[in-house]
Every structure is written in structure tokens, then in C-alpha cells.
Image (cartoon, rainbow, N blue to C red; front, side, top):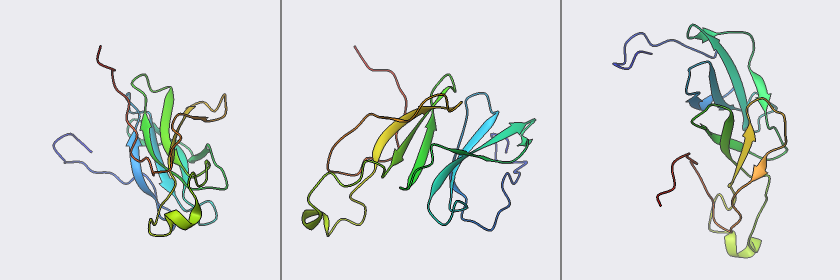
Length: 136
């Protein structure tokens, strides 16, 4: 859609739950989370050409765990995302009241040239990663 909210266009059309989109800095890819991979939330990349889908979405960094909350790096070459692939980092009995005791942040190259790299490790859920400049 345009920055003023006009000209909204549908990008996906699948009976699965497509949600949580993020767009690359140059607007050529949308990353989104979907249950289209067997009901488990996974990340897909949808190439765009002139703001319209160009081909089919491709899986990104899939695992046997939930993957979601994507954010592109400033140069558009990396994606930060949350994933349960790190599993629980606490005693399960201590996490019983927390509905999501997982969600470490990982980064991976958009082109899939290497496996995701874990950048956090703690017992709490990390969510909604972002890229930024570290103040000096």
C-alpha cells in the first residue's frame, strides 16, 4: 500500500494463517509467518516485482520449532527472527505459568547461504527483534 494507506494490495492468498509480515528495505521481498507448512508457524519469503507477488513464496530457515517475528537488516541481506529451535532454557516446572517460555533471536542470510545463528540465550522469551546502531 502507499504510505498514506491507499492502494492496499493482497500479497498472499492461502487458506493457512499468513501473518506478521515485514518488508525488505528495497521492497523486493516480504517475509511472513504462516501455518502453511503443516500447521506449525514457519517463515516464508515472497519475492515481489513492482509491488506484486513474483512466483511462489519459499520457505526460510524452517525447523521443527516455531519461527516468527522477522525483521530485515538495513541492507536487506539478513533477517533476524525469533525461534523456538533453542528449546526451553529453564526448568520446565518453573516455566509452567509462562505460555511461551521460548523464543530466542536468530539471524540468517536472506539467500539461505548459511544456517541461522543464535544471538540470544536466556530463559525468557525474546520477541520482535530489530536492527539498529549501537550508541558509542
